[in-house]
Image (cartoon, rainbow, N blue to C red; front, side, top):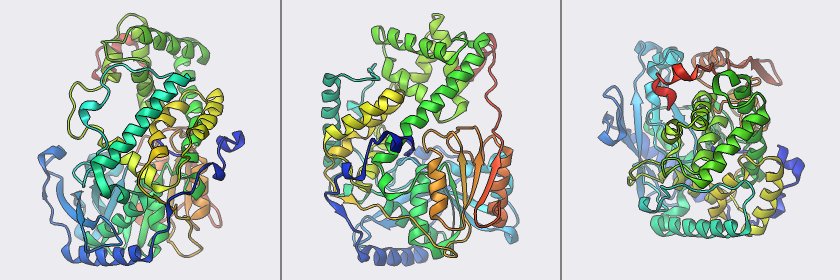
Length: 532
């Protein structure tokens, strides 16, 4: 899910039932892993983290320090192989007497790192929070230098133009099946026996060890997108260790959603958000010239796709690269002006902005593909997936008739899970009863594409006493510390005081949407670095 973005409307389409996902090879977590986590946390509390200068490859300023926390590769064998997770920190800027501990952040993925998170200390929206908290980021297992997962030689990654059919042919499907099988085999071959240990339950256990290593009695945590899922797993597994938790852009944690159904549920949400972008571009036809209606903007987009299928821009940007770049408008409206400008310029004969925004990088590095590898390993390991392509074909063909923008792109991203070699985990039933957790704060944009809003409602139902703040009529994926002062007020108040909005039994509050992006003229935009 490209978050993982996970995951309504699919239920109405009857695209996937639990029976469609075979439970073969699903594993129940043995009690040994609970005992192993306890032992690992005790060890980490004794060892702590020795912070010092960050490695040059992290590209962090001297104001940020780094260290390593060692966690078991296999929590059933805590005295066996241990792996190092890279941790970054900026200490609280306020008086020592006002310090509230460490705030640990995860941005999601799976496969993303938060090593740069401490840099938010310099942003106005985080000023009071960074005065009270040490801001802590880290690279989860498999990510970056944290025992990295690899599935593919960087040299084998596509660097030239690729197609992206909305309704793929049988020949194209067979080609993608072959690619998925090769990729899944690459994960098994390049990562080896360790592959089975990269999953969300272990990410939650790692979080518990990190808490202990930081010297915190209880955890203060903020997770975005996929980070909300294993944060919710943590809250279920270790509720007595929770101090405060923020879940921003939450994944639907219901076990039957993980991860196949959640990925299907993304498609209708992406379609809505793509429509939002086209409506905005049409409203600013005088600036971009893409059309006065959403349909006309769609036609402009299709015209660009068709031309790129015949002749790739700069020899590198084909329909696939175009589509990948345009998918970003569904995640954050900060992309809207740049993508609209790129489409507009291309149609006027200038492909440079599109090439700058959409072309693959010129050079490969050993880290290329690491994010996708971790994403694939975690999603495939976390739960059963359909192992017959006929199920994928049925569900995505039906879905693409109503929501073509993202459907098949997402299917190809996840298809290696149909041919996965490692054992599957059994998704944990995320759920806490009254009084088990302190109040936690959920933040959600009503039109989020990557993690549809139903996921926020489901998470609130499952975490008793939790509070939900909704940004109405907005769709940016991840809203905490962003452009909405109302949302930021709730976030700051909660982290500084523990107070949540709304009364019992249902704690909810709403914020008006942040302003839409303000377009600028093409002439002015040509003078701005952000034009590309």
